[in-house]
Picture 1 (cartoon, rainbow, N blue to C red):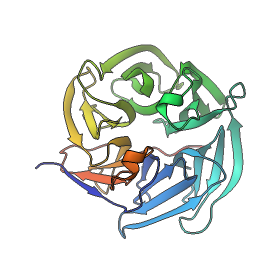
Picture 2: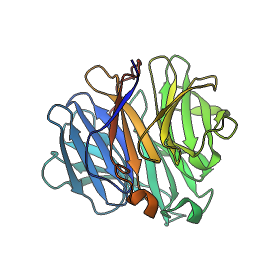
Picture 3: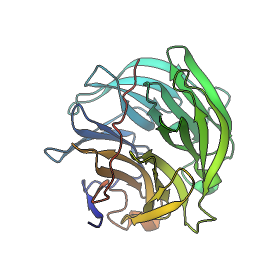
Picture 4: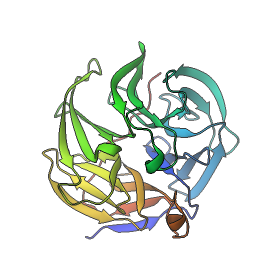
Length: 301
């Protein structure tokens, strides 16, 4: 069975990002950074709704124990947003603020680890890669003890994935055009011993690695910004396959659906050429991959 790529929404976003499948509601949540919006796609009905926030959201993760509350990276703040998927959203709690030394930064990609701790990184807020100030960002962890800095000198903080069996955390600073692997301690949430496992240039993959997820075989699925595809990468650093997406600026992906065998993919259209190429900026689903993912973890506040 060959993969089938379909768009699930006709709404083309400037920077669709941060897809999170909530198996409780069978819905996909994601953000559009430059439109200041968060989104919900109901898989059963095909309904796509959104609401505007006061600032640029970098990610959205449901709050454990609540169907209408989410942790959102909003500019440089971690906030709890209440939203029923229909009416206007409102910020109900501030969890913390980061990068006081770099007020021009914003929070980008973020996810909860297997224990429900939140990991998210920052970057310069320029809207084009050419204008970005390098090494301004930091990767943080947010848990019951507060906010902890894990690594700094990050340029474009992006993909996160965990492999419990391998005791590994994968992380992407897109500007490196490489994928990092860290030793991961699930009890403490600490990471150590960084190694590079997959260099896009050495594998002749055009573009930058962006958001990512992991399947139940331990292989990574990585969105390639500027490459028009998602790639499957083994934990040893082998390129297993590339699946084309009909949008050049592919931003992130996550597994979802009732059987966690659908890969949902977000895209962007942040230059004039891409803005004129529909369906650039749409959100897609890919079926027929022959693999499954793990349930996305909600944030445990």
